[in-house]
Figure 1: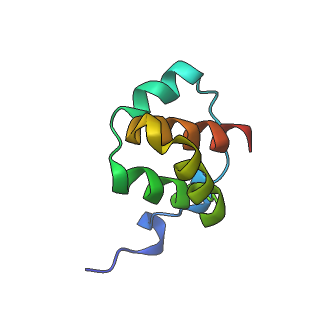
Figure 2: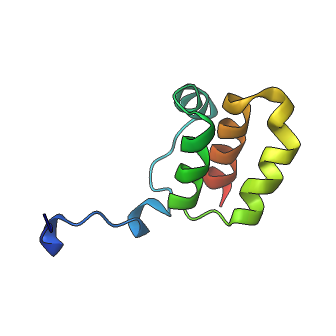
Length: 78
C-alpha cells in the first residue's frame, strides 16, 4: 500500500533537534535501544556512518546502551 505524500514519513524533519531533550531523557531513550536499533536510529537522524563506527569502537566496552546514549549525545550537539 502506497501512502499519499501528505502522510509520508520524512526523515528530514528528524535530522534537526527542535526539542530540548536533557541528557537524562537521552539516557532513558538509550535503554530502549538494541544493537541494531541504535545504529539505524543514528542513520535516520542524519549521523554519518563514520561517526557511528567511531562511537561503537570507542564505547562498545560499555555495552549497547552506552553506544546508543553516545549516539544521541552526538545528535544533540549537532
